[in-house]
Length: 395
Image 1 (cartoon, helix red, strand yellow):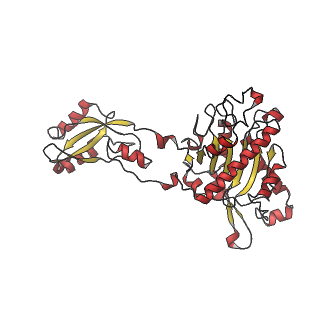
Image 2 (tube, helix red, strand yellow):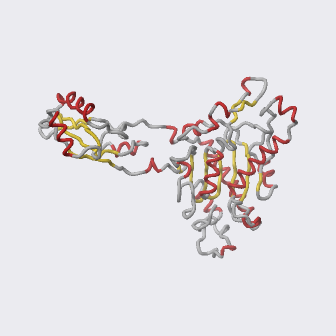
Image 3 (cartoon, helix red, strand yellow):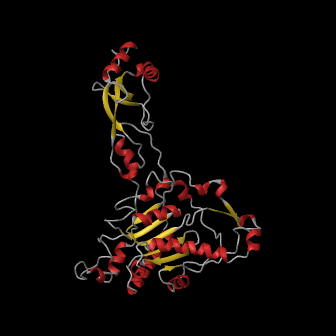
């Protein structure tokens, strides 16, 4: 089972906020609710809690605890004065109680938090999509491939960091790359940045290869040169150095409209508006597909290492759908270790992230192979460690 990097909102512990509550008789409910709605400030931000909970007194009598208002909305003296004016001071004795500050997002949170106060909860299955056995097998194959690319990078004197971008619907390899900071002397030539640039080059080359007449007659509807994630495609990708890709597609090649990508966005992306959608495909209606306005919409990304903040933001802007990586980078990781950029509430695109994918298998396979001598690391110091594991380096 793959280890999903969950958003902070799904793993946080219970936080409470103080409210005034009172214990009343069931027959007093209507009278007290009328007073709350007409005289007290609304409990804003607490729509997820229920206003009333049922309790049982020591003598077995049924009682009701009812939420009056936020603790900070009124002082105790002001609340007592309002109750006295309404003639309820003898029936309602307010006290402060802590209720969940945030709505529960997972079943575990709901089960724990409801002990503090009853809350509403509707489980969103899109938060934790199931991965089929077939899909998981393909994921492991891709992870193995990027580690093979990392080995090739090492043989060329580069850092052993590799990346691959795949269209998940057809399993087409869109681009592969590895880190080229050493050979180029450019600090931004990370594996992810090179891979995104390679996808952009495919798009650009595809557009430039079409005649102007054909472009105007059939915009974004040119033929597709399918390249599957087979050994042939991967061998073709290996022929390149640094920024690599499988054979370039034509402009406007199909990109998967990923349902998970839609449900996982906290705000609508510009690409989802009608004005930014370009129809591709000509002739048969069933061949007409919606093309999103972003470079890697819905694509899967496979990495040897957890990307840094810069690379993580590049994946956000490219609108990827899922990211799988093997080695967490405790000092610099942007997708789980130091930050969770993929689920940051202030960003307008979110995607799924899975960590330590194939970790144990790779650990055994690369035992003693990827300790980087150029960084002065003793091969016998930590036998079996993965490349750059535990080091302070941006990936």
